[in-house]
Length: 343
Ligand code: GCU
Image (cartoon, rainbow, N blue to C red):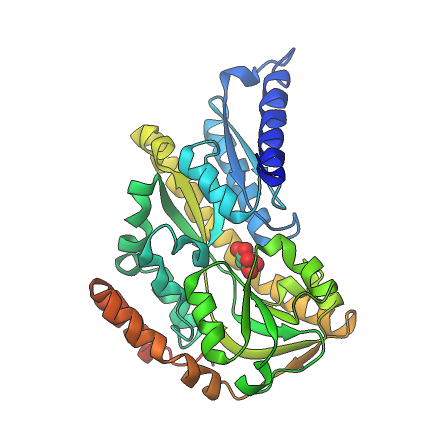
């Protein structure tokens, strides 16, 4: 057992023990209630955590005699990859995973990872709210043991670096940039000229600090909530991806719910999406303000066109490899036409 998996196992064992002990002497005995474990990798200040706590309260207000929902933040149950595997096997019930990671479980998810797929946040939100677009993708991992139940906003991904501001793709040459662990992200980085260094989110801060990498790419929250802005002083709005986070649930657990319970859970999933999106807007504004004023991060607004042109071959290659995704790709393009910009 590697150290990390052992830590996950120990955390789970402790959670199980606590769940049992909590029932001693109480009126509603915890041992009568099924514990629903939800893991994610963000802090307790993050919109995702706030939304999951709202889910916990909602489910317990409706089904509290049967279920005890527990939300585990900050990779307490392991890295995202590990949490997806725990959700697959049913060791935990739900977790939040970046869409990036899911492409290794079902290639259909590759679509939402494409750089410059969405023309604006409005087109992105409209696409992700359209079940004709998300449905076939969200259901495609049922065989693998899990299903996507809703999506969460994770803003726009941009490059940020320790020493060198990124103004054109040429500035990335020779730089080691952390990317998420997905073939699409590695390919994107290669096309843009940087050296892709895939690693889990929880390892990025130390890698930046110890200069193992020269930079990373993420939304603004990573600067403040994860402290990356303490080390990286240049954040460049090249806007290369809008990659949603996905709440996934163990399929055996979801299928065992009664029809009435499933309706309540569906309402809860909708609540997660709504609360997270509302919280996201103010959280990003605050993060930007704090990064600029307290961390001294400089925000740069380069011309995005050369970045986009460098990544353009990925769209055609994806469509050639997955012709069945073409109708979904076209539906996204229709939203792009309708909402070419956010202004
Ligand atoms: C964002 C995203 C996470 C993801 C992280 C990453 O923070 O919300 O789900 O893990 O990026 O870059 O790995």
